[in-house]
Image (cartoon, rainbow, N blue to C red; front, side, top):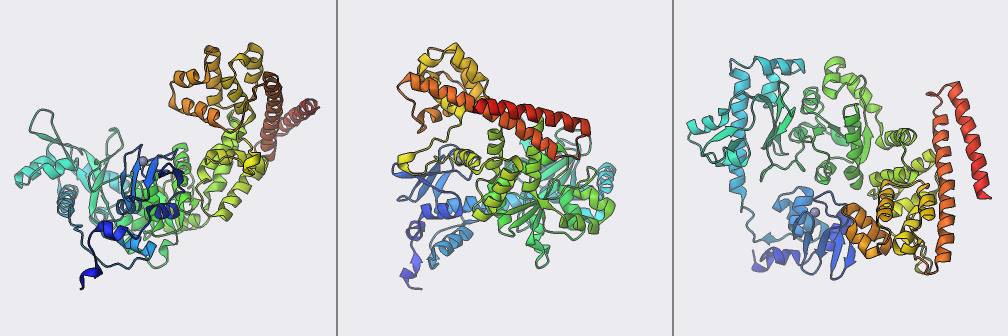
Length: 586
Ligand SMILES: [Zn+2]
């Protein structure tokens, strides 16, 4: 091959690429900031853009989690690829013809192999114990109760770590194998100030966690007594990251054609196994963590649709709502399947069989519909403002790239809560950090009435008198607003800069500086400011009434849960509110 058919090094290869373009198209928008660009960091739970990207140097750095590198490392981390897969992805994306690259990707391959081998050895040790030991009755009973027999133990490499302190370490010592890998993987732990080790997993059923290729990344151990925690994972290592690992993904190779039109996400390892046992292979579980963007990326390689089948208790429902953000961000459709009578997939299939489960799965509903119903309950039962509720909703759907899909969701929300599109947009734009502007000459502030008052009171300390503060506090407002007012009351003489310095909580401090930097201008004429405050308070009172009306209407619309007397009472309240509103609007 002639020498020019070869990239001399990685820099040479990357010279034909744009890190900005890749990130923008595959992840999130970037904003110019000096000579760099800023974007949300995909490698930690980033709320404000904290990743800086330099196009000329082709590098990125996150100021928060310290992730950094070039486009190859970005793609590796972001897509969970190895080096060659990342190079392939980049050359496909930019249409670069892939020539030979003169780089050594073998750098750490041999050490990784050692780690995989160690996991494999330990996995076999645990399996052997579960299959052959005299003392295996208790773990076997547990597994049998969940519907698994000895054949399954072999099939899924299940094992048992006995109640001993040196089961693993003495095995290694007997075989004269060095302990450094097992230590690095967290399977044994070094005693303080001693050259001795003790076992990490004791008295637990062992589930090996594998990657796509079937190599063991780490382990999960479930107690068979009442030890806490119920589940324990081996520690993170060079080969095991909980942000990426998906239990069950190794068995995707068993998928029949077309079976991955959707993927089930379940909570438990036994759920995955029971479904596998019944020939359902498109199923995964996370390691007790919430679903990360890396997990979603992995899922996206197989499908655009998931069915979440978490437990139907409060924890399971909350977890499923928490997990939709990263899936939506990658354009994955999310359905939800709630099984009856506190069943999980494992116990349900065990009792009713696969056919019933599949029937139920076919009737899965869009999770956004369930989420809106959940928000209705929150709204009726808890005293949260419609703005807070809206911003909760927006946080779930703000990353959806498909405009049609996000419009459908937004319209569902708007019609469920009877708010106007404009009111929704104010919250939406604030949540995504966008200023509300028609055009630059006619900038409209994205502040709520109470935030505008708050801004005035921060900047004009002579207006912080008792009457204004008292009336102001009658308005419905968020917790953060309330906290800042009480800070102002305690520090009535503070200038804006002193306020910023004086607030200890970072979130509140950022909130105040956000208000100060907002495009809404405070007047230098305090007569105008006072008039403005009074108008805002009046508007706030009207909003409060609207809020109460909305709650009542929502309750009335659920006529299956209220009786006749209650209905009468609600209608009366509604009439009083309408009269009050009329008075205020005069
Ligand atoms: Zn970060």
